[in-house]
Image (tube, rainbow, N blue to C red; front, side, top):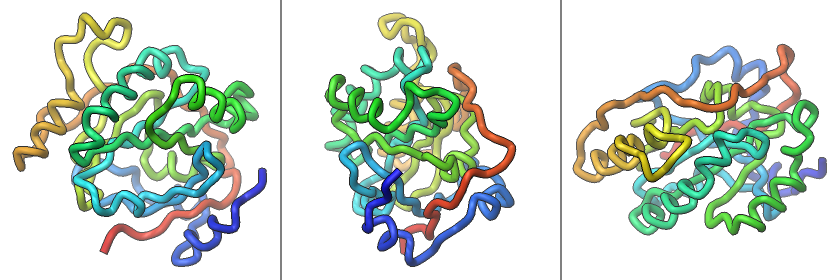
Length: 214
């Protein structure tokens, strides 16, 4: 995989190994997320710090091969179109190893984003370093951050992955509404339903993990 020169510029302020990341506990409610930089499907590197001026970020770990991720695809598109103008854009990350699921290779990601007209970035976490720091174990998995990159909600989008029209609880939207009111979301954590994310026992390589906003 070719790495853009911009990758080195973004990571020059801090460069962490996968082993270092594994030594840290996974993010939970109230934790401040560190900056990171990953390659977007447009070929450019994108970092969390690119969202420093917003109200927050909806980070979702998703992929191509998982049927549950596909069920939520259109919902994520609508969520981005609804909430990005209000300061809460969707940032999708694919942590799947193409060596295990070839259909999740970078070219397939680009094709998927183009065909489905993703209005949000779709990043490849090719070494799973960002995944390991977040601790996501299934796709899709949501992490709602506030303007200071503090984790305020972890879990699923809603309570009906198989049928959007039967949704009774819109957990993510309720969490965003709570943040907009200056309140803590309730519930703060929900159970994600989806495909397990497979990780190798030995970390693959290095990736960029930096510092939070100043």
